[in-house]
Amino acid sequence: MKMIGIIKKNKLLTAVSLTYVFLFIAMPDKAYLSVKNSMYYIVEMLEIMPVIFILTSIIEAWVPKEVIMSGFGEKAGIKGSIFSFLLGSFSAGPIYAAFPICKMLLKKGASITNVVIILSAWAVIKVPMLANEAKFLGVKFMGIRWILTVVSILVMSYFVAIFVKKENIPIQEEQNLNQITGIAIKEQYCIGCGLCEKLLPQHFEIVDKKAKWKKSILNNEQIYKLESIMNKCPVKAIGFR
Ligand code: SF4
Image 1 (spheres, protein in one colour):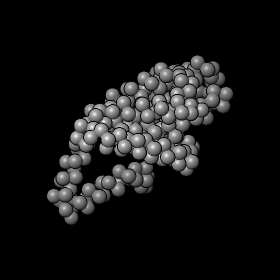
Image 2: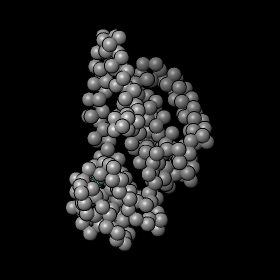
Image 3: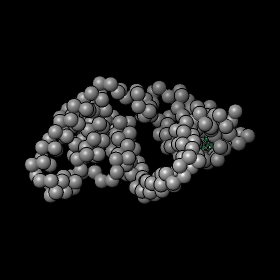
Image 4: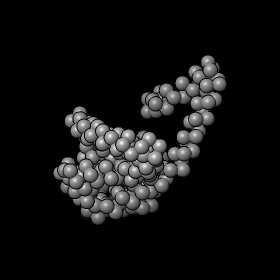
């Protein structure tokens, strides 16, 4: 039963593992090539992603929500589209590095339209690439392709925003403090590491190797501190009610 639960939670990983098993049995040479390619991407991701996560955390902690909303939010209008094109076009790194940044921007109030523009510009109109393109294929080719790409991105962002709403995206909105009525601990995930008790002993205690919430009233400052503990919990077992 426990095994079925693990498989259900990791459907994609299970499917990939089974595919590899099948490949190693049926086509070992292809399986070897596939593992080699996967290792290349894993190493590349391990080199890039820590920097991206640090950058994302810094922006999340230091840039106020209002600033993101005014630059990239629903009401940012044409200014938001221009900022989004600039952010995507001047970014560095592979496209998967853009996903955590875009998720953070969505969480902080960026619109779906502008996030699509950032992702698309990041993927296809990097400024250093444009210079290379002009050098090899000519300025006219690069210019026309760039204009048509920008138009396509704008059309795509408009339609994605019609079909995809924020509630369809798994982002944790910042909680309205007035709506918080307590703390919920998912005991099945808690590994009893004791970090929450160590950081906030007046609110948490470990009983039988599981964290328990001491029913206490929270003020706003404590709620902010709790948010940081939630992020630090290694298994993300703590949440607001
Ligand atoms: S930090 Fe998380 S895993 Fe560790 S005891 Fe607290 S709730 Fe459990």
